[in-house]
Image 1 (cartoon, protein in one colour):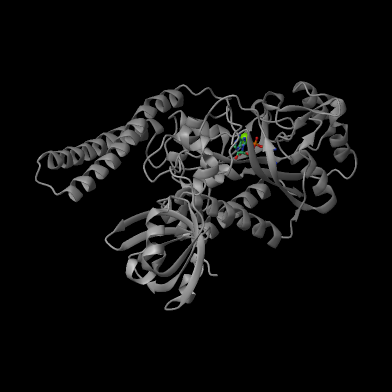
Image 2 (cartoon, rainbow, N blue to C red):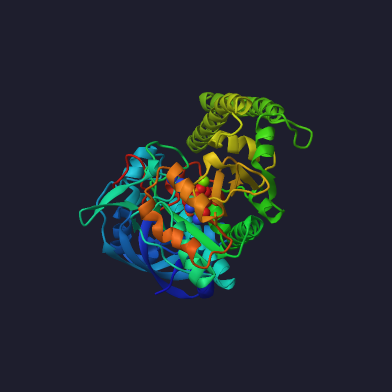
Amino acid sequence: MAYIKELEQFEGKEVELKGWNAQKRDSKGLVFMTLRDGTGFVQCVINLDTVGSDQFEAAKRLPQESSLSLTGNVVKDERQVGGYELQVTSLKVISEAEENFPISPKEHGVDFLMDNRHLWLRSKRQWAIMRVRNEIIFAIHCFFQQKGFVQMDAPILTGNACEGTSTLFETEFYEEPAYLSQSGQLYGEAMAMAQGLIYTFGPTFRAEKSKTRRHLSEFWMIEPEMAFYDLKMDMDVIEEFVRSVVTTVLEKCKSELAIIERDTTYLEKVRLPFIRMKYEDAVSIIKGEKEVNGKTTLQMLEEEIAQLKAEKEQVQKEVDGREAKINSGELKKGEVNFNRSKVDQLKNQLKDIEEKEQNIPAWLNSARNFKRGDDFGGSDETVLTKMFGQPVMVYNWPQEVKAFYMKEDEHDKGYAKGVDLLAPEGYGEVVGGGERETDIERLKHKIVEHDLPMQAFEWYLDLRRFGNVPHSGFGLGLERLVAWICGLQHIRETIPFPRSYGRLLP
Ligand code: 4AD
Ligand code: MG
């Protein structure tokens, strides 16, 4: 038995493939089947004259997602995805699927697809996204392992909050209240005091009672923690890490990114040095008080509105042209179908443009009225990164908007040595981190101020009592990174079975 991804090695030879009928059409004496086997997709040609009428009729009848084994000759064909075709000499059905597999090649609504996530995962685009996710995970481990970081696992059931109490999932632990971990960080700090350089990589949980395109209730986070590192060193690691993972994935996932139709122009810019700026400077830019390359955010957004308008007119013109052709009655049936599907595509494009157009006034408004001292919202991050078109690191945040464990900057009172990495193209925060508070009295004060139970943090305070050292770390949300690299509109497609507000099945 062979796998589709290794067909190259079998050119001109006979192989057996086992897989599923992803799609099929037939014409006189021929069935064209797209077989998928988990490693890829390949067109298989079943010829009546070669396989005989019994097998041919079986193939012709076979519903979508039936499983089968196909034996045939591997032939090079540049026009095919993957570059090869299987000319079938015999086939054997393993299991004939029921008729009406819910997910056909036609368009489906998102809720329907989410309800059928267990089947949707088989479609080509979802298959490609999961392959990219896998490659990202591998690249993450490679990066840290090569640098001598030790992977250590933080518990999921915890007795204390890490990232504020408003997003805690509460559960019960032998009649005692317990929480699902929001972050492995506090444990990461303890483990770094034992091993120096560590990273955790596990599921984390946030009760976010809203549906957004960037939030999941269950997501995977990579959290390195480094003894003897300050904020500057932390930012250097973030930059090197993100650059390394993105460039590796760009190289190794070319065909998957092509299936997803990802334009990688902006992604390539991770090769440039990341922009770094303090929160106060970022605010001045967002509010339009400070220019970037001779332009304010307000000018940039107005230009974008004009650009979208022009784009819309262009697309509309093409729709009108094609519709006129369809209605002229001069086209053959095949040409009509071709133009119809083009028109559908263009109309979707129009919808996208209109959605963007509608967003901009809201962005403009919130940028103008941004209150200095507030945390950034998604639109503020979008507006800021649009000015650069590449990753931006914002550091030294007002202490009030950041977690209790952040170290205050001794030269910049009132500001915490925290950093967020914002991805361009509207993806926003993908990393949050910073230098940790080492002063035990200040930490105790912050625990009280944040209304956290002191007793549950005694073990954490021990890290300051015994062998206290400057240390830093960060957390990268895996799904946010997958969404950015794949260019996805919504985070729900980045994880096999997303958990978000209102979604616990399948
Ligand atoms: O900024 P956050 O809340 O930081 C922490 O949890 C720190 N304890 C990390 C550390 O320093 N060790 O979360 C870190 C990252 C965010 O930048 C984002 O990428 C992701 O986790 N994230 C989410 N991803 C998906 N859905 C959510 N609800 C997320 N909340 C945070
Ligand atoms: Mg954050």
